[in-house]
Length: 320
Image (tube, rainbow, N blue to C red):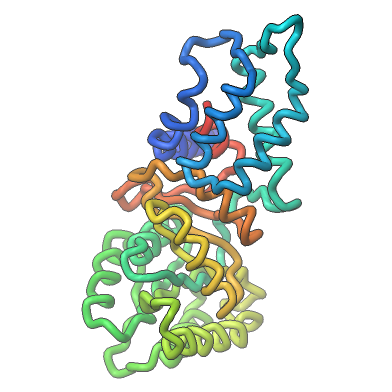
């Protein structure tokens, strides 16, 4: 119990730290003094809208949140005086309003489960490092982890993945005699089944979503995985198809996710480099536009700098 409490506290701390740059922008409209009353008027709303847009929440969603917040607070001048609301109550009202504007059911919880993970994303998104970090998390949970080097197009890709596999102390499957990515994945899943691996993390090429041939290759890999899902690992495993998105690219992340999801049907998102971005609000925009949950976030450069996404703690880190 004590170990779990410590892990939860560390998880929450990392989420808030990763969002520190975003929070400095979004929360600037609220003085740092605790329990102070805030003047809630049109100037306040205009300032909050501007901060949301700068944080990459997106114009459409930002306006929806502000309009709904006005209804919830029922702002109106009393004898010519703006309504005043205690800071903590105002923050809670903003959180409630944000939740109400997201698609029903898209408030995700913990997602660290055994199974098969197909990891996709463009070059430079943080895909390889995210795989290494996930492998370490599973290894820390005493799981048997197999990392699959499915990117056979770049010679350096396998070397980079091998470095992270060693850091995570996880086994890597990278047969030099097999060149086709779908064949590598097929052989890896057979190995996983025969040797009782609990977790399979499959790397793929940093596919530019505009390249049709590479997307076709990804569809082949996806087809093989889906055929293996029921018998693989001696159970009906959890199957996740996760895209790694770079938090620093803002709205472009949504375009990438839309195209990859069209190809293979994504189940969720790993948002990397959140610690180096002031655009943490893009999480809200992604959830709103795609109805895809963010399942993990990268919070730094070390191998243990990845946490399961918790929506409530994210909102706390964003505005408090």
